[in-house]
Length: 89
Image (cartoon, rainbow, N blue to C red; front, side, top):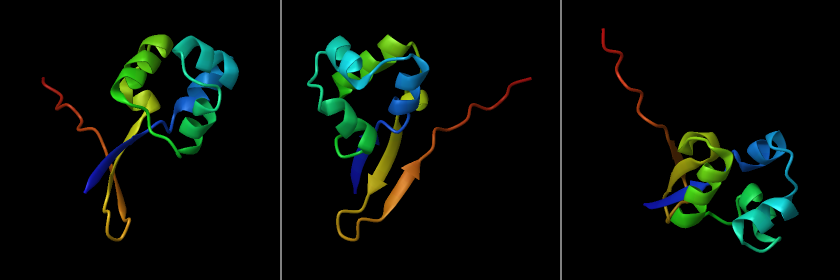
């Protein structure tokens, strides 16, 4: 199984903060073409970029990213959901 972290919430977060793809790329120090690739899911952000995005938008991991397990043989995908904390009384 391969594990991928996809920036599924990036476009909505970028729109919410009124940033163009060009402005976001400049703030992150990446090429202008990298942002649409992230938003389309053709590229996956590395750990440093994930941290930079969470810091820039001041949000949690789950607000921007989705973790997916991909079977390399049949390409079946399974989205991993974060565990919910048990409510303590």
